[in-house]
Image 1 (cartoon, rainbow, N blue to C red):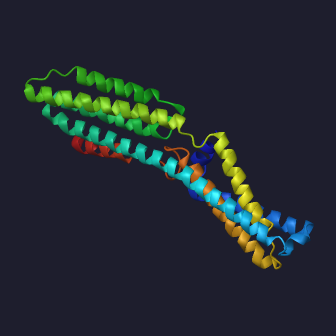
Image 2 (image 1 turned 90 degrees about the vertical axis):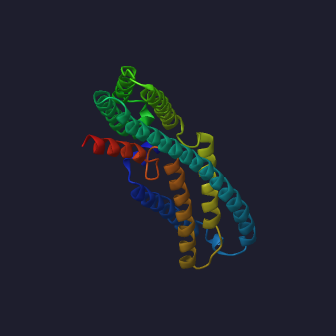
Length: 264
């Protein structure tokens, strides 16, 4: 989809600048055309109506955008919490491996390291579904734990805990992939409302009666910049695992760092 391509292929800073140039610049260009074609709008006769209309539209626009951004940000916060829990469970598994026999511990760490690296590689592509490498690595990790034969009660307890943590990791990965594929931002009716209210906000500013153009142009440019910034924020929040403010795989990298340090 278009929003996913934009946030994954264009750096966040450049995307913001492009939106500002297109929206604010387009609004100013439209304002120039309107002032030339309809010189009567330069007068202040209609400003009382325009002020009232702008106040109503601006309030609805601000409330709606705030609601959308808040809802989408909460989704990213929830995904970030799950990623941290996933990383914590894997770190615990890596540390608990030392309880087992050296050969078993080495196999656990090697399998866990392979899986975490595959999960990191899969992270930004989760919107397309699970990767074969991560699927295989997870299956191998389960197989490694099934092959362990605990020698005492301590190993039995740790094995049980580790398998529970492994199930948590598997579940967290499944939820991450499902969320990446389904949380794609507002549905088209909400996008339609966002674009419509944005256009209405810009439209009321463009037709506002200001005699001197050098005072009118900056006003339109400022409102256009605010609209572009809001659209940028909605785009970035539309995909929890893509873009400049996406959920980071840093908890999984921490697991790799722990395992690499132990293996080193």
